Image 1 (cartoon, rainbow, N blue to C red):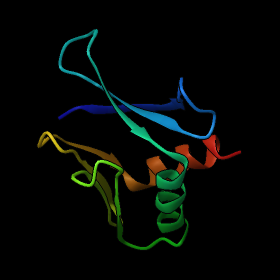
Image 2 (cartoon, rainbow, N blue to C red):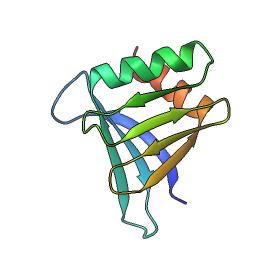
Image 3 (cartoon, rainbow, N blue to C red):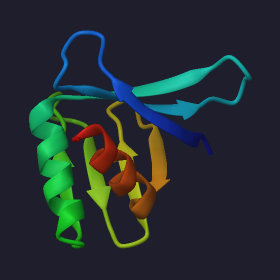
Length: 96
């Protein structure tokens, strides 16, 4: 399973972000791009400490939030996970 590393600003938009996971190889990274609307919807779920789902722009991928784990289920059948409290903390930082 890929290890969550960080959230960083997007190169294309100051309001978007990139979520980065470490790949199996040392130099490999997996990146999920999130738009401002997706970030806001995810943050809304996390700030209410509830469960929920955010559909991503491609209409095939989704983010599933529960109390312990947040899963990023991507169109190409990859699933990336991050502890819910970790993603919440990172989103709070990036929204400042």
